[in-house]
Length: 238
Image (cartoon, rainbow, N blue to C red; front, side):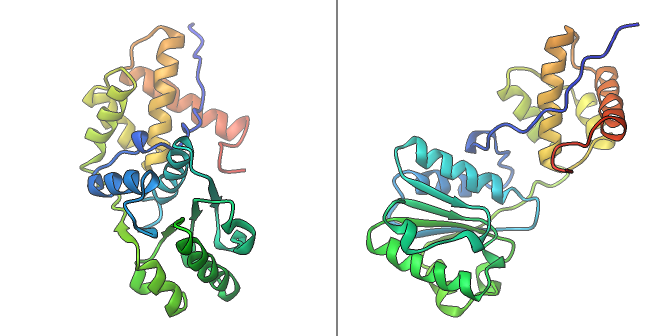
């Protein structure tokens, strides 16, 4: 009996190129410009529901800015934000989950924004709530509103088949509609897990020298489930 070779693929490093755009084409173009030349905007705020891809976009923009020679600082939460300590060493400061800032963090963000703006540097932030509903003091919301503000729209279930097919084509192979339908019905439906599955199927197909078919996907899903339940915890669940 053939032994199944499988792996649970870790996500690729976040890039704007591997974000499935869906209805976010305008946002991606604006974010790419902001991470590079900046278009003169002092800030960029992205907001959207959990799972829409805000953290991916935040990290991708920071990576793009760094590739273009900008000095970057990135904070996974507002409590990590400094002010005087980083204003002189950063051209772009990214802050995830800015809606979770407490009073002390909001005060540091206020100071940081002002200092960065004075020297032409910028703030990139992500939030689960829109600007008007941010639970922050008014002067912080006002400054965030000086820049660009975009909603990150999640992919709809109707968008996912085309998005997955397009992502596979970017990697140099085709996914049949039968494989995509089976994955959407039996796999985890968040986009991070779906993309990881596509990457894993690509690698498995090459390693096992088998085409990507529903039987191969079924075997991989079963093996992955058994591995998660009986051998180790899946990444992100530790």
